[in-house]
Length: 87
View 1 (cartoon, rainbow, N blue to C red):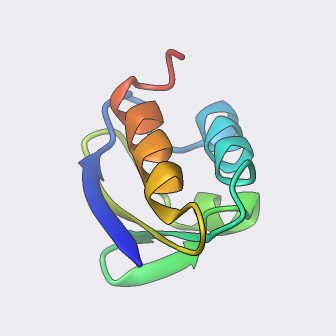
View 2: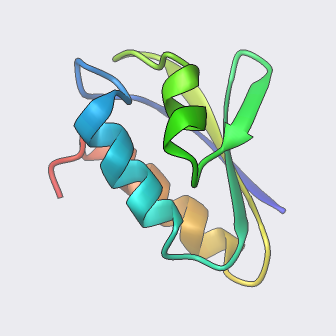
């Protein structure tokens, strides 16, 4: 299991378009991937799950992966969040 914390940089947070980019990136990996906010954990490969967290700009989230490419998956998602989805 590999875990990293990151602060959401873009002002709208993980809503609509950024959330779509986030789950598309998560789905590129074989590992199970979750995103956690305030003790609530959801599947990072599920749009409804990610949207249900109500993540706004400036929020601290935790990205967790478990599987064969867990470190790659977490690092890629952290990089995406840190770039404010400008990739």
